[in-house]
Image (cartoon, rainbow, N blue to C red; front, side, top):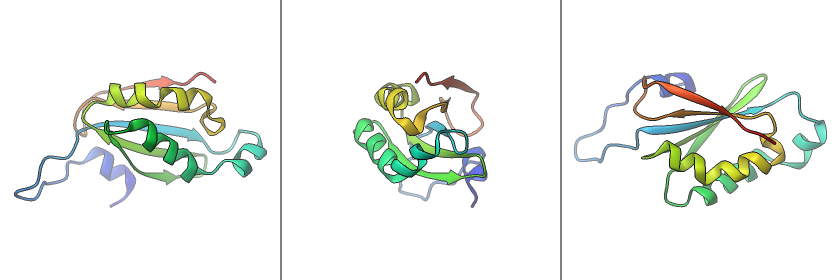
Length: 120
């Protein structure tokens, strides 16, 4: 399943399993216009690790998709606003997050979204 279909389609839950968290935070990182030294010095896995630590028990980093001009990082949990507040400092200070945008989805796939541009 590709990353786009995972965002927009509902996945069935096997019998006996708890419903997975339905809210999401999608972080779009600029993949081409930051200074080359930033891409060389800072790795995506380190950035994702910082997000995981900041999230604590509020949610989880569920991977990323790297495109030609950007990278999308997927965070899922029960409260998208709480997840955003938990990672906001990192998004406003980490060099890889310059010119990043965040989309908050407060419900299952198909729910209305709103976007926040970070300020670095």
